[in-house]
Length: 75
Image 1 (cartoon, helix red, strand yellow):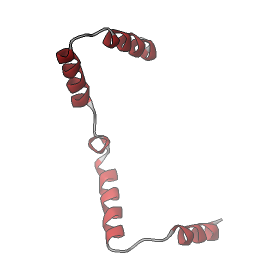
Image 2 (spheres, one colour; image 1 turned 135 degrees about the vertical axis):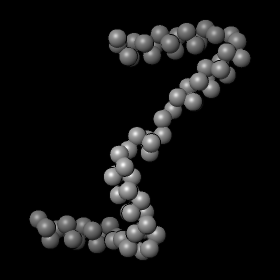
Image 3 (spheres, helix red, strand yellow; image 1 turned 60 degrees about the vertical axis):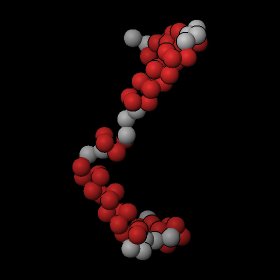
Image 4 (cartoon, helix red, strand yellow; image 1 turned 135 degrees about the horizontal axis):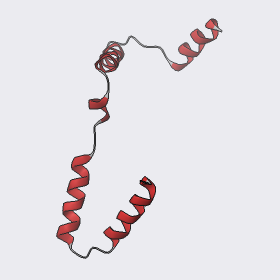
């Protein structure tokens, strides 16, 4: 199946729909199918992100300039 071709065919079908009710149903269906990327992340990654947010909220972070300076020392 060529996904791009299928998208084009689906879009063409949608353009021919005259029923507002059907268009609303299609829109609702698509909205309900949207995936929150957070739900797809591994537990370890979520924990790491949460730690980073907590550190930032506690002021435990570097400015961009400070980070660049530290990186230059490693190279």
